[in-house]
Picture 1 (tube, helix red, strand yellow):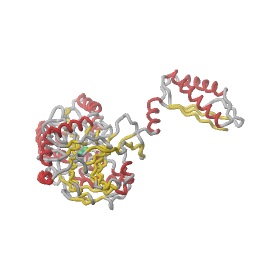
Picture 2 (tube, helix red, strand yellow):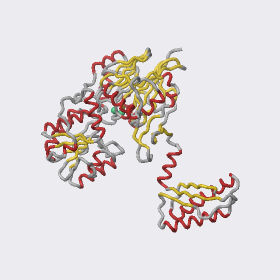
Picture 3 (tube, helix red, strand yellow):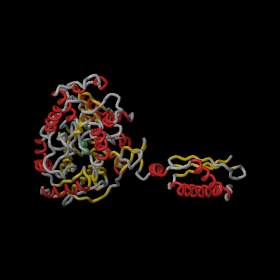
Length: 552
Ligand SMILES: [Zn+2]
Ligand SMILES: [Zn+2]
């Protein structure tokens, strides 16, 4: 029987975030696998207490003996965020370029896992051999250091997995897109291209970091009081632009926020940001007049704990802001974050601080390919099949139409869990489904989205909590004076509510005798119903109710 070549996304197809892709090769019952990327998505307010979401790796965990390695394209959280959480279930080698590897190592350090022996550093444009896969890293441009596409060669053909990219003719930090190599690979033949869909709705080109730099310099030259720039720490080109502009207008620069310092350090360690001025400590920066300082800080999405939010709320210990100052939001307003960001913008403008964002000035370019960038990549690579990933359904369906427009013979639409047979067959198609889903990181524990702990917490946060403790005498009689405690129930008069509830409990209790376990259960059920009904009538809330029986 012929060997098969398979592709299966477990995350990132049908959503932007938590990328996890699998490639399989071999006999139908004995595929060897590689995983490309292992990212997270950030939870929103609808999931109380949960910060991170990642793909359910169950399908590959079951096959982990045949998993040859995790190959990482770049260091964005939607590509590496889950690595230290999920690796213990997979225990395989990890491959990444130097900057990405450094950030991965930090993640393992936080979890107190020594990854030294399993984390392999790949040079830029380097190769990894994981028989039967030959993987070649190809330098692309994006919005982080060291973004790579992967050429995955197998005995039956080559795949180009683009990872995240755009065509930036002047990325400022790091190399340009390795166009030459992409063209060569195209000439040699590409069976399938797995491609970024994020900006497929946007016409033209994504634009260049150099253009942002020019515009930022113009803007910053006209500002004459304190300048605070906020952007994603991981965008090191933007960081360099902040340094460059500060120097050009004769100011000092200071970094604010943990991840800003972390990324600066990592970039320097990998040999980047060599020709910039030295940042000064934010405590020292306080001694400079406000015409002479630029701050670069975290929290560009209005994150509650981000530096920008703390500065604008006047609670930051080192950075003060006042009327006449300016804040530049040099980042995308990510859909879903508008509400908290606009709240932040409002807070600032209300206090006489100028807000500059992508809405009123040119201070940001995307890191993902617009249609003209896609067109270029298609022309270089000339794939026989295109599989759009890294997008919501609307992006991926639009990307399918785009691929058809570009005369790609076989565009294949997928969603998480789809298994595409790329070889053999007349044409690549989805032929099977792997189990897929999401896991939530709740505290230190991976939980299922419909786990009881989360249901309980949602219930508690909406309805409050009531606890009743009833004493039972050795003869099985119920003692008067139950003990009540409650939280989060909007009572108008606490005493009135408590006495009413005690009365209700005593009426019910009188009708019960508690000898057997069954009788206990019956009492608990009856009390639960009565207490919740009482609370509903008095307050409109049916609290999460717990009844304890204590034998004395
Ligand atoms: Zn991404
Ligand atoms: Zn990315």
